[in-house]
Amino acid sequence: MSACEFESLEKSLESHLPEAELVEVKRILFGKETKKLDLPACAVEAASERDFELKGYKFDAAQEQLRPPRNIRVGLIQHHIVLPTDAPILDQISAMHSRIGEMVEVAAMCGVNIVCFQETWTMPFAFCTREKEPWTEFAESAEEGNTTRFCQELAKKYNMVIVSPILEREELHSTLWNTAVVISNSGNMLGKSRKNHIPRIGDFNESTYYMEGNTGHTVFQTQFGKIAVNICYGRHHPLNWFMYSMNGAEIIFNPSATVGALSEPMWPIEARNAAIANHCFTCAINRVGTEHFKSEFTSGDGKKAHHDFGHFYGSSYVAAPDGSRTPGLSRTRDGLLVVEMDLNLNRQISDKWSFKMTGRYAEYAEELAKVVQHDFKPKIVKE
Ligand SMILES: NC(=O)NCCC(=O)O
Image (spheres, rainbow, N blue to C red):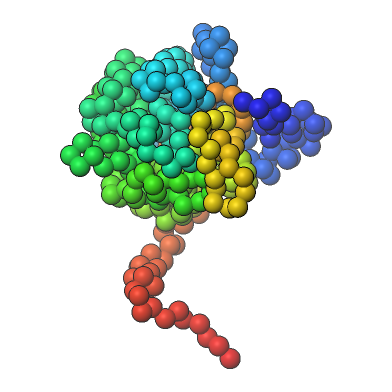
């Protein structure tokens, strides 16, 4: 971590704005205030001993007459890689397992029902290098791999749904995918969701490794609600969020790996806008730190070759359908964000704003079907 990395927008506002002004600035920037959650002292102590940030917030919903509240807790985990990128692969993976194990234990102390990790959490984000070896060796079977087994144990032990985004190797044809494995709180694997949109930008050379996913917009019915996973670059595609929502997702997780110079101004907007547009909760998770690679690589932009991507800025947050959002985790530290939400808020906001009811989907479907034809002529009126 660079010593001079800016820690967080929230911290800066809090230390520089007068209190009354801060309230207004936060209202405009973040929407209706999310209350702080009281987290158990043992969790606060363990997080501090284990050197990670622990924050908790709560989104309220109105009390209804016919439906009881559906309060659940989600946990978002962001972290650095633990060992250098040239350490033996198995050592790197098991160090990451230990780190996640100790963070998930704290999530359990905080009553988390569903936890989601960052994109390809068991490995450095090495796709900038374009080298196949040794990075493809981090790939594991979604069904049988050690990481899935590890998560199944945690899920059973803590009665927690786990979303585990990994580099997947499908054994039959040795195909690689960027995949989120979804494990039920029973410990059974519920299924998997593959990354639908593969970036071709800057150092994100992921198309060298894997293709666009073929699992569509699957939604997983868990004991705690219907969830979906829109992996990283998919957050720039409003229709990707939309299709998960059309399949009934109540919470859409967005496990990511992205760097400050590229995407930071977009980060607070995209997942939040998706929550508003689709009457659901969204959870944006980004890794932290700067990862150094032995071989130099270029960004194909005429600039000098380099050994790292730049800084992964963390800043994980949760957004609600009413447009409010939690403050983000730090830009520099490992962290666990615990958020309580009443899923009844989705329908309450839908009844208020009615975006789904007023959406002219049949018209769009008809027009889009024409737009994707090779002989499409745009409808432009000229003088
Ligand atoms: N991991 C990934 O898809 N990153 C692409 C860059 C971005 O979407 O900010």
